[in-house]
Length: 99
Image 1 (cartoon, rainbow, N blue to C red):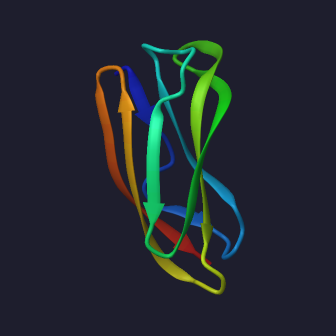
Image 2 (cartoon, helix red, strand yellow):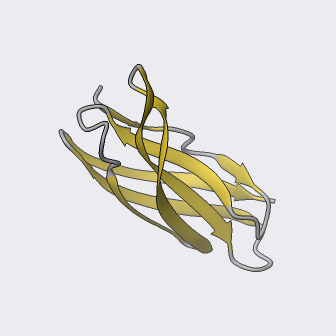
């Protein structure tokens, strides 16, 4: 496998708190984070570029996906993620439990 996404589905977060819920990477392009878009039904999703270990490397570029629920929302939210990697695409739907 040349790419992966971690921590999906079923991330558990606190209501109103910005939390990193997953990361994405592309082993074929360690100097470039994957291009990722995401949205949630009851919150805000932001994607930032970061660095971290993966693919046997001590440090490579990754996409970090953060979620923050809408004010006062508690329950189950759905995350929709789409991304581009060297050998295809990332297309995931995940569940976020907001407490």
